[in-house]
Length: 475
Ligand SMILES: Nc1ncnc2c1ncn2[C@@H]1O[C@H](COP(=O)(O)OP(=O)(O)OP(=O)(O)O)[C@@H](O)[C@H]1O
Ligand SMILES: [Mg+2]
Image 1: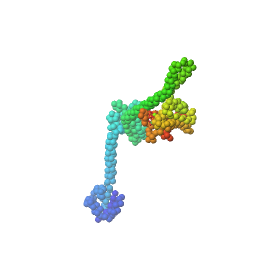
Image 2 (image 1 turned 90 degrees about the vertical axis):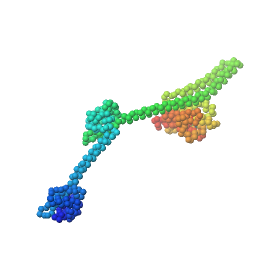
Image 3 (image 1 turned 45 degrees about the vertical axis):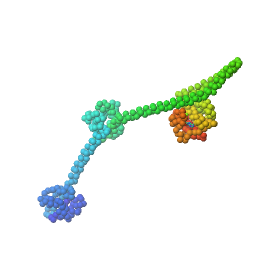
Image 4 (image 1 turned 135 degrees about the horizontal axis):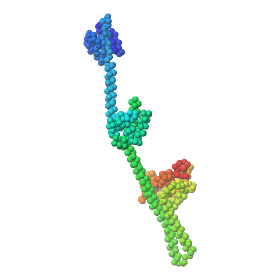
């Protein structure tokens, strides 16, 4: 509001107003203040009309004129109309914005790639976006008759009821998974997030169809199962191949083991013929000959039993004596070692130590390592071949070291020798050391490692004592 007291010369004597600018108006003439509207104002003052709207200083005012009694002075009241107008303008703007936002929300709801719906406090549908309607194959009119409980599969009806109560109590529920049934009976795996709007007593529900995700996950699980099965088959195949390879080596060993007693038997048979052609054979000589022949045959039969025993797959884990097992294993390839003039030295601290595991698997490991050492020694044409085996017992571990003087392994190949099918031999399979590692580390919880040592290589098998490691296989 601006109030101007004006004298008869139309000069402003007093000016009141809430704006500081009113002070600058004092003493000014109306024609200088209202440059653009002066004519309009002066006519208005002359005709002495009640009020008039004028536009001044970019604002709209209601102008009133009042003549002071007993004076030629008068008062002009300027009421700022736009304040009210501003308000209604603002109001209109709010309405416009609200309408625009509603349109935007509506568009967003309809374009959303998730089902969005609004439910009352009983779970009945008040609104559902296009996506939800299409997903469930219901029109909006049909949905008004339904609730999120009625659209659940039988086993989820009670859980849906509970979810409605829970969201009203707690405010929100995230990722509630259930099975929904479409109008045509199709079952959909859905994940729901719900939020309770207290002021409206309504629930907003966002629904995602996760049927494809679940199918994908099931497929993935199947795929993993197939891969695991494949892996298991591969392992079995390797184990089989490894046994075949060992068998090849063993047959070679049997041939060696038998060569000597077979020769001896041949000689004995020949000597029998020789003796009988000259003289009558005494009972005593015959007994002696029989004994010798039987001992050779017994030895050969024992060899077969030993090999047969070795090829029997152990069915269950058992405690076995480490020293004796190493000793017996060496017995199986002893003949070959002798032929190749390789000395085997066993240094054992405690001959009573035991391990828990499949004894024949452990034998297989010892034979693999010793056989490899023997081939390395033969290949380097070393005159005094030596395989040194030591059994050490520390405070925490039992360690079996198998060292040879076969020239060792090239540094760059050290980390490859345990890889399946890695071999430098013409007829090698490259499975021996890989299987040995699997047996020691996966079946017996030990560690098998290798390093070059002095004039050859050193394979170490280490087992942690049971009191230090629950899984350790050593007792
Ligand atoms: N004591 C050793 N000295 C030198 N090299 C060795 C020794 N032991 C193993 N190797 C190397 O490691 C490779 C892999 O040995 P692994 O026993 O797995 O297979 P392989 O002996 O070649 O074949 P297979 O055991 O089927 O006869 C060998 O080819 C050899 O090059
Ligand atoms: Mg080998």
